Length: 250
Image (cartoon, rainbow, N blue to C red):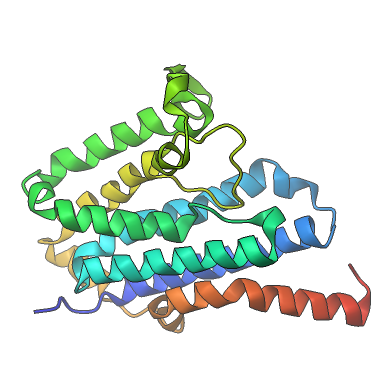
């Protein structure tokens, strides 16, 4: 039987999606329309961007066991990631997206679903800190180092950074560029943090009641997050282009 709808989780997803749309709107203004917003490329903009992706990835892992057919869902999300890649390569090559957030999320769904029989044997109280530690140790592998943030725990062997496969895994080949890059490592470990966090809370009645609380209109946004994600960037570009032509403001 499918678990009862966790309406608060839909609301959190909806709020995060609206934050992402606002961030992408600001990105378009700065990068494509030349509006000068200095803080966007500094710490405030980085923290904003990271808050969005961390929330999405944690929430996706948290909700994996709440839905039916996770393999089918993972395939659908992966296919949407391929569409995003194809469209950006065709129409906006300077901002092309390869191995973006949808490609990662789809792969994480599939991997976690396939490993579920094994993962369910790991106590959540051990899986959560273990996944968090692995995320901490691998957060900087895209840049060639072990560690998190400014903490460098050693260099990753250069031979690991070879081609498309290693790029997908988290070790980008020389010259690789993507406007949105979420590799399997380190982000799969943050995804698993969400997966095990739900394991800690699934049998707690208080937590289940809180998650079932209504979240108003944000629920609607959260329930339709995938189609909104697929359509929001073309909609933003259309609105901003029309505004630019009508007002000449940017």
